[in-house]
Image (cartoon, rainbow, N blue to C red; front, side, top):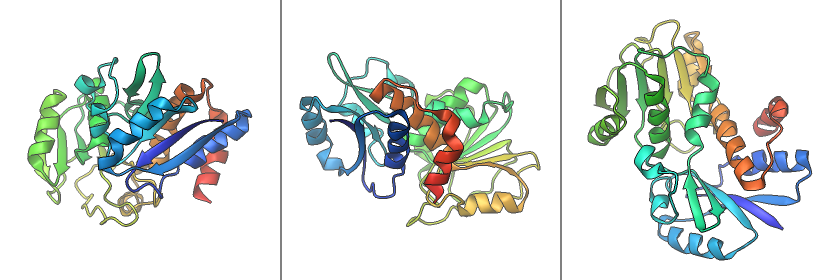
Length: 267
């Protein structure tokens, strides 16, 4: 039986098997989607083994491998030079190919927002942040403030994506912004909360948290308390998964059943 999977370290929290399993069952596709914990030192062996396994259709990649995976797969689409992180690997004619569905998955829930020239705050500077900053750079946003434990890393990312703004340490006061995005693991179950004072955000600001376990993070709870519009982590997770599913199984997932899928994921 053919299969795809998600790899990371840790991986037990991943909802990707539920998402892809739901779509496979809905479409009657005889395949599986699994989760596998792969430590950083095991990435090379993992991809070498999967390259020989003809039943393997590909994998999604989560923390902490989104950048390191570039050293183990082909990059015909120039992902290294554009986003600099891979979240999906598929089997190509000449070997394994890395791509990124995070950027499109992030953008879909906010496609109706006019962010041109408007200030944005992004928390984090890892693989997910790379995809998000890439998407923001294509939207023509205004100044971007990137908060990260290592401000130098954040500054390098802003420069790399041609974004004007500021790189500040975590805990720095927020500037007014039209959109605040948590692209870090802060607020995830088992991780410290993301403690931010949202008072500087205007009343029409949006708060977007890519963390989905728990679904209502402390950041989103604080945004709800202020009456701000929010986007939860399942939106990006389902959006990027839909693109990956089509690459793995050559079929479009039934997005008209998203409400049913969300009910499964939050049960």
